[in-house]
Amino acid sequence: MSEKYIRENKTSFVINKSSRRYGKFQSLDDAIFARDLLVENNWDLDSIDEIQKVEDTYIITAVIDEKLHIIAKFKKKPTDETVQRLIRKRVRNPNNSKYGLNITKIFDTFIIKKQIAGDDYVFGYYDELSDAEFVRNHLMDNMWDITSFSQIMHDEENKCYKIVEIIDGRVYVLATFSSSDEIDLDRVHEEFITKISKHKLGLASHPHLDELKDKIPELEDLFDVKVKDENWELENAGNPMDVIFTLTPWQKIVQDAVDNSTLESLEKSLQRYRSKNFTEKIQKNLDELIELNLISKNQDVYIKRDV
Image (cartoon, rainbow, N blue to C red; front, side, top):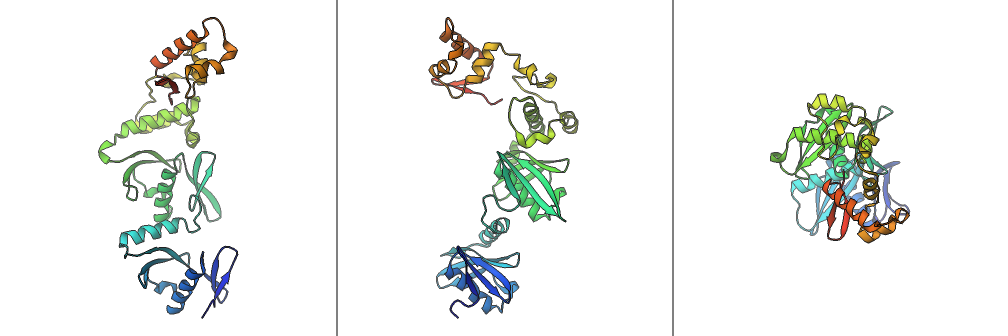
């Protein structure tokens, strides 16, 4: 049959019959195998098994969006669990893109979007790709129904637990735990609201929480917890300047300059402030910032604490 029904493109081989596309493959050998499999099954996609044995090789195939895909090849017969896991992975990323279907990245934030009935819907914002993938996968498996989430979710694929909340139609992942025994919901909610507050005050950057900056009182009532931090009095901070001015001018100057720095590198970066006892002044403020838990020291390197 040679290459009948197979059309070569620049980087792929496409199977076409009667103006219908049945699949796209990276190699001619895979395209010939898929074409022969289709012919053998009278071009009926529904009748093709998921595992094909060819000589000493097991080939996993799947039909996704009415197209035939070759998923993987094994020398030993794979388990049913392995087959289903690989097929699910391909369903979520049929085009082998960077993040898979429905996930985009803007700056450091991962966004889940889907077009439904012609309208674009945003289902959530995430600072970790693993959280975005977990939420996207669950939504795909449950017809994009956000009510299908529970507060404590078991991520079977990654063997962990995730704390999930639905807020104003968005799906938020608050925390991840390796064991259910580690979960303390009050603490999770407290840390979540505190993180939002720090982002609002400019003490930390969490762009995926932007939509919640003005909802802190509502969230405190919803979760029955209060904003809390061991170093900052966040509950009564009206704006970022209230917090910043709790430091002396020199403490703030030194804190801003610390970036995995040695004393010598700090002296160079702060040359414009040079005056009498310059080195001693920097050292004094470094020691005070360490006492305040705002920076730490590892051997000769000073590191800014993430607040």
